Image 1 (cartoon, rainbow, N blue to C red):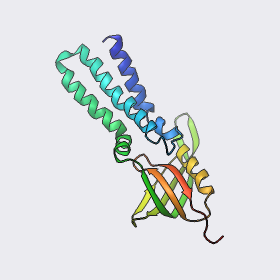
Image 2: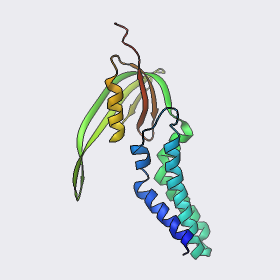
Image 3: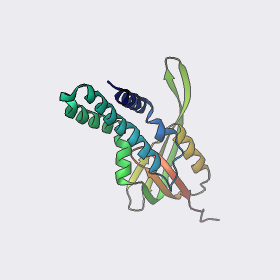
Image 4: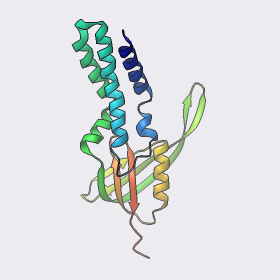
Length: 176
C-alpha cells in the first residue's frame, strides 16, 4: 500500500475512534449548528472511503466491494450526524415538563471520571412530547442554559439524533 492509502487508513482509524468527540465536546451554536456534524461526517465517512480506496489500490479486483464496504462502515459511524444534517435542528416553542441531571461515573481500566447525564422533556407547540438526553460537556451546557430559566416556556433548538440542546432561550416569567 502506498503513502496515500496509509494516510487514508490513519485518517479513518482516528475518525472511527475519536470522531464522536467532534460533536460531543464542541460548543455547537445556533447559527453554525451544521458545522461540527459536517466535520464529523467528512472525518468518518470520508475517512472510510479514503481508506477503502487506498486498500483498493493494493487489491484492484476488490476495489468496488471495498468502496461499498467503506461507504457502509463510514455511514454507520456517523448516521446520527447525517440524520441531523438532513432533517435540520428542531426549532420550536416548547413547554418544559422536566429537566433532570444525574451524576455518574465513566469507568475504564485506568480509573474513572465523573460524568453528567441529563434529560430534557418538553411538549412542542404541536403537542408532541420530545426527549433530548445530552451527556458530558453537552449536559454541562444544558445545565448552564436551564439555570437562566424562571418559567417553563422556552424556545428550543435541538439536534435530535445527536442528543444535543443547541440553544434554550427561556421566556420571561409572566407573573412578574
